[in-house]
Length: 69
Image (cartoon, rainbow, N blue to C red):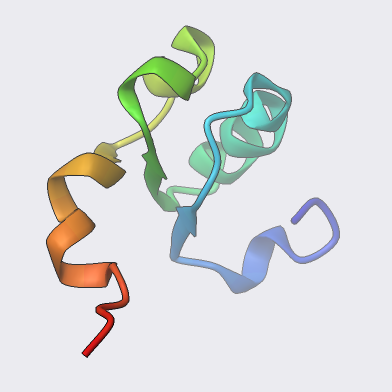
């Protein structure tokens, strides 16, 4: 992300790891829209504070979960 920051206008991050905070802050400084997809108990507070949108995986589970059918 650091090397290609100018190539994004939107980013969807499937992680709640606070180690991504610095990369997200850099992307936001370039006016990139950030969406983080994680679970409520597994997203770092720092990461949630720097995102534009947060999606809880539990809220979309029925739409993305593979069925046995």
